Length: 234
Image (cartoon, rainbow, N blue to C red; front, top):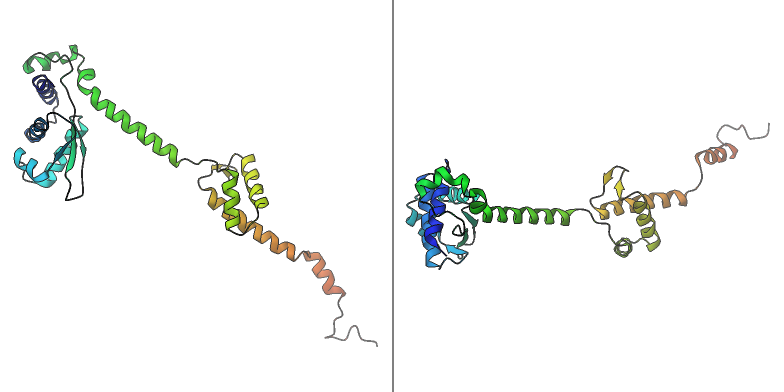
């Protein structure tokens, strides 16, 4: 890697960033020294106490804050470790492939003419795109997927219901696009199946006692009433 060109570009970026403070530059240079020791191979394993000492930062909170800001501004990629026995990892982006060959003092006034955004932030943008793509994949994994009918049959059998009832459940929701209440996209088919089973059990109880309310009243009227003597001979 051409580290001189890399440093020229990084310093130009820092000069153009109004949010950069001396503490950011100090921490970046400490990381750069460790990167140099690692022959510019990524990632580098860092020890907080060592890097704080090298960058003259006394507060752990400040150290973490500045690290995250360097990551947000696309100078590094930070992978914190919460294991005291293994250090955190830092990936430093390479900025030696652009056309930034002018002195730093001239770069600030002319960066618009040297494809500044493309040459400096291409690596950072690539990592951001990769992160977005991973997030989209996670969302797709969490999105509802229609279960195979075999899975539904197994689940119904585990709950003491027949395969036929499982098929009724599948066919019903398949016909309405797997919507709950006809409006909301289903999120958990097992929860819907349990509700289905509860309704089946209620229906079976009604079938076990098939008399209607009118029939019950009719039976009560036709039965002799012994308490008042109306059905006894005069």
